[in-house]
Image 1 (cartoon, rainbow over the protein chains, first blue to last red):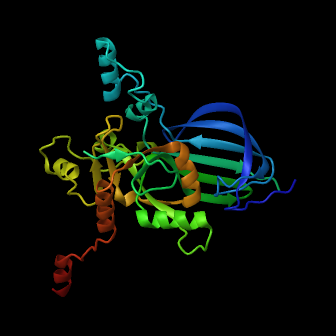
Image 2: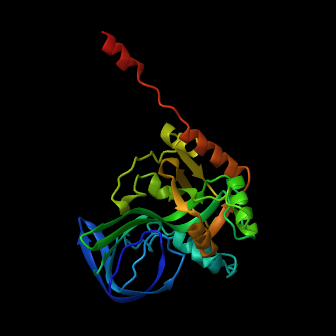
Image 3: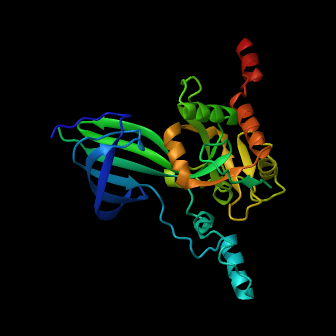
Length: 119
Length: 192
């Protein structure tokens, strides 16, 4: 099937992740996932690129996976203290914010997507 | 201490803090290989003027003309202060940034925290769930409006309350409109 790159004309991608590998590139840990995509219908949520035929896509990310869970956030420390005192209220702290408070988890990171276009 | 609010409507507001916003660095097509490089910012703050965002929203709602439509929204990243002070907030982008003293009595630390450094805006939130953060005005960028609007729906963290958001906007405008003057010593040397 013929394909072409049309920037700023979005189309929907049905992605199926097949495998995940980890490799070092220039000292930066990168995680690679191989996805197969096929375009099914028009979707305005991604205005940056469009591929209109099945293709193989490799995704690389520079996000560090340093796990600093041993460092407790102030929110987590307060939670533990309240639990010890018996004053913890489950709905008083939004659990989703804990991720933002874990040092090392909220730095900007790069994602590079490589796609092979069939002509 | 900065106060935050939660808007009940779904439109973009100046001062909105939104998580996981994408900045497209470049898109290239070389020898049948499509390469898209993008940066994901964990937290950004909307800097576009509130009146512009409101007029854009109203005009799109009533569908009467496009004069007030915006193409994009200006945002700037928020960095975790603990990473920022050590110059490590962009380490996942392989960038080493300026370090600041952790000693609160040192001038660079005091200037930063008292917002006397025009490039940065330091924020401590009354909301304990949000870490102390620094906005770097130099790293502002634009995001396509409709995509940010739909992204906001499930990724809005909170919104900076009025007067605090105007203070941020005013400092951002001052930073953008700064004028660098030539070094007078260089001119004197040339005349010798």
